[in-house]
Structures are given as structure tokens and as C-alpha cells.
Image (cartoon, rainbow, N blue to C red; front, side, top):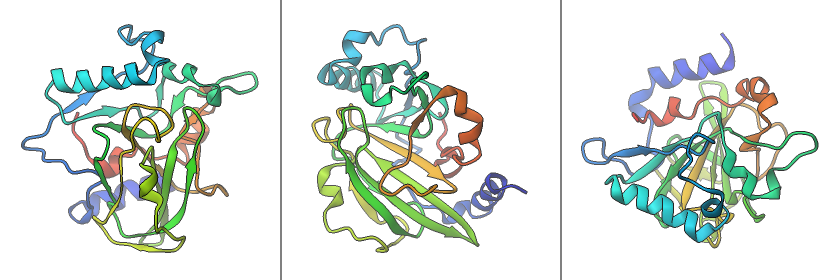
Length: 230
């Protein structure tokens, strides 16, 4: 059994002991799937290139649909990354989204869904980047797992230390405003990694489409843990 299959089996067996990443009441809260591929013709380049307009577009979608959160993105080929040179690369730009985004209000609390220690943290302060980022390390019956939380507030990094113990359901931060989170509409980029591959305070959240099979070996579907029904 490979590591992804072992992870899926572990999370299924222990599903009643997995905590939350954001506050969510399945009885009351609704999730809105948001499409950031070329199929979404409503989201024009003029909106995408203007952070305030982009934020307003997301806010209005959530309001009109009476949804607390927008959701989606795992292995999605997104055109929105054309807004930033950060995702350009020699020969092939990065467009493949490796995590799941949870779109919502700035200040939304973020929690650790599993016991952990802090692996690393950093303010990846480039236009279009993660902004403030926390990475947790977990041990699941001998299976190492890492979880990444991007686009947090700057204050979320205050007082952290590498190796610090984090309890299940402990709040670790909040969604950052678009002025501090890498210039995106407020949201959480949540991603799982089996191996950090030497990265510290950062790990690619967007990759070249041609490398999808490579990243599928290291980036499990975050919904194995989130268990959100869209």
C-alpha cells in the first residue's frame, strides 16, 4: 500500500477523531463551488488583475448564494495565476492548483485538525504568493504528514516557534486581508504533503500542468481530511 492509500485508510478509520480546519456547521452552513479555470467567463481579466475588484466578486458570490464559504481547487488548471509573474516559469507557467481553497471573510479562524508540531512558518510576501504561511507536521501511526495554511494574517505568525506543540482544534491563525495575504481575496489555501522535500516555510501550491503526476504522488487530496460535501 502506497503512502496516499495508507493516509486515506488512516483518516477513514480515525474520522471521528479528526478536528476542524474552519468553523463549519453542516446543518446550517452552505459551501459554494468556485471555478477559477477558463470555463468561468464571468471572471474577466479586468476583475482578476484588480485585487479589490476580485475580492468584491468573491464576496458578492458568497452573499448572493447565501454561502459562508467558497470551496474548490484541488488539481484545478487555473487561469487566474496569469495575474502574477510569480507563477511564470521558463517554458511553462505554473497553473495547476495543488491544494483546496476555502474562501471567506478576513478574520475567519483557522484550526489544526490533528495534533502537530510547527514545522515552519514564513511571510511569503510576493504578489500572488501565500503571504503569511504556517506548516504543521503530524505523525499518524508512523506515517508522516504535513499540512500547509496559506494567506493568513500577519498576526497569525506572532509568537510561533519551530517545534511548538499544537493541539487538535487549536486555533493557529485567521484568514488575512487582501493587503497582507499575497494580494488575494481573503481565503485559506489548505494543502497536504507527504514529504516537504527540504522546503521550509513554503511548499509549491501551484505547479506546471505537465508535472501533475509527479505532485499527485506527494500531494493527497485535502478533502480526505476536510470531508466537505460540495
